[in-house]
Image 1 (cartoon, rainbow, N blue to C red):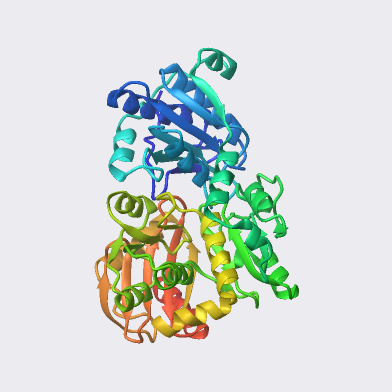
Image 2: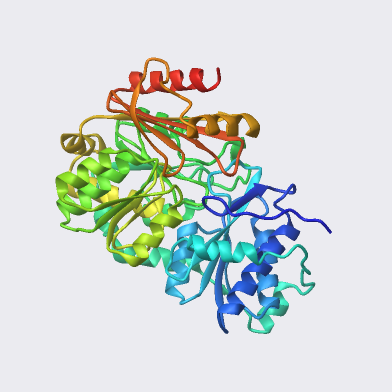
Length: 468
């Protein structure tokens, strides 16, 4: 039987359900993981769960059966869970590995497979590569059902949501938040964060907090274009002063201020640094992905905080967090981790932390952003995902890599950086980044300018240039 080689991308292996993401291929990946775990020592334990996507329960059962058949103890979540719940569970339960069946923010036709390390965050690039190398071409899927492995003591069910909620209740004063002058609206995007917010913030206005594995046909990614119901709800309800959204597996965040204006991840990273350092007196390195605004560098200089830029992929940031004292680690895509929590992106934790900031300070999100602007200046960021066939996408990236673009319409640049993709530092103080998606036929075009009009104009000139 000829099978395709399975490769993990920026954040796990993702593929279209029933095309490449099949029961058989999930079993192949799991056999590679089992062999890697068994080669490292005996008595390995794996925390396993799935989010709200189609087929999550089925694929999780396959993972459990293959691991158990290879002598590995499985601690399996009942019902859907978020990715941060798995990472927290790995750490709390002393497991060696976590597995989450999720395609995160990808369109509903996708599912995926994420690996989480014993430290409570994404597995390191080195460990992921080692598992990849062990994925066999052929595998035998055990015939025995889950009851068989439970009877043998190799499968145990765990209540990860209860554990996670108890942990949040230790970290935050929810009684005080219940009296906050700022009402919160939450959009789960039909994802795995819905039950937690119901439990810890019972006064929140909830959107898309029901079971819909098809996500109404929309990718559950917390971008402004995908969250117009939330924007309108905040805009049209005077008492709501903050809108919070998380993606399909609840590790990414998006926010709205009291006017229904989108607050992107760049601003959220800056707000978190500002709150934790300036107001809570915490210190540590800031680790950000290459696609994040340079305004973070400016804030770190102002506050005397060290900074490190990584390739895109939270696994690189998590590795730094495990080995060093990190205050905030984050990406443009909305995946952000903070000191005092696990080394993992967590949209719910970050959202509650900023809600706490608003409540304690008595300031709205818009007012807090003004505080940030006093330190780093105003800026506007936008991203355009262009659906382009892979051949054309690769040709554009090659042209950029070979320094073939001398300017983008009226916008000239002073230098280029190539840590991950090609970043152009513009003469007007903004920047452009071209980067090909590793999981979809998309070319991501990132841009920052001094106003919304300028940023949209930059994106338009880039599009005209690269598609000419």
